[in-house]
Image 1 (spheres, rainbow, N blue to C red):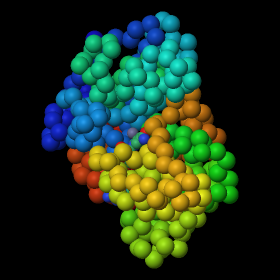
Image 2: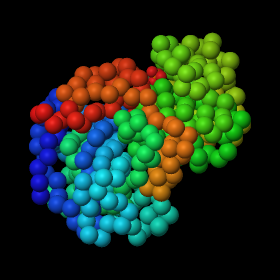
Image 3: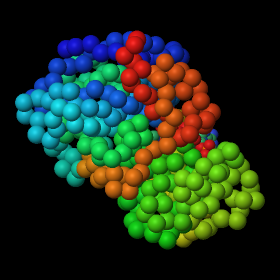
Image 4: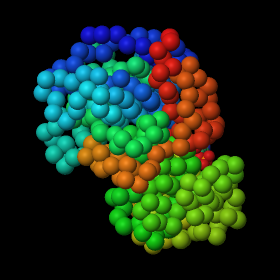
Length: 353
Ligand code: NAP
Ligand code: ZN
């Protein structure tokens, strides 16, 4: 075991503070990674504040961070895919059982014996739960380490490991969206990646936002149209016209307003995970045979596919780079939907602590 610097929260109401945490020694199948950048996902905030207590209660201290890019500093004797010096990424998962039908189907994110990057029981016993990427380094089984394309800006790559795959996967799963009318609801970390992918796959992209100040950015990011969702007249014009909608909203909202935007056989997929249940009108779904789905990140193979796609198409997240000392302010801004469009923590800032 060795110790690394990190930022942790001691309770649901605590501010982040400087800390040291244990990491395991590199086993035969492990890759040790020096973390260079880590994105701040809204899931980090939900977890730190124990907003998902009924589904996944938080164990403290909590060290979030599942949008990790870094450089390999050591590999175990059996590691075949990585070597010291490689640029790599780690997303929301660090282990699964590899034998269940779900893992066999490359959908490790649904494995019942899976381990999330933070706040999951630590199978190695290094700590009560796994600790995430708001830290200097991490040790991960090579099967959960991704290769990062060398041509992309690393601060902007980090958010691809969660916000990227979480929007890429449902868009790909929906099918060929070329020429289809696709809505992205909420222009935050996930939403702005959804816009980029939907545009890259040839859709007519429409952003729904509550923030009029984001309209120009939405167009710059690739949207063809922007609807201010609080404006009833603007909303009315688009009722019944969408093929597919991706809902990324992090808080309670009226989902029926978006179901009503779908045309016949249209689908709305939820990736946002508000802490309270949404009220769904049966009638909104019945008329038009519409469907409502959910989606959770993506498997490891699909995550690598997404990263390779981003490398080929020069896609990264739009980030505000911050030193880790600004973590508490960043969280306050995230709650206010005031980030363009993902915070990426420069881990070099941790060295001076
Ligand atoms: P984010 O950066 O905070 O973006 C969420 C956006 O939703 C905001 O920028 C805002 O966009 C909109 N919004 C926020 N509050 C709203 C409200 N009360 N009513 C209407 N719109 C509101 O968050 P994120 O990191 O993209 O994450 C979004 C959600 O996805 C979170 O719940 C997160 O936990 C979840 N998530 C799920 C997965 C998965 O695998 N399914 C993975 C990662 C994250 P506008 O300003 O444009 O309105
Ligand atoms: Zn996330």
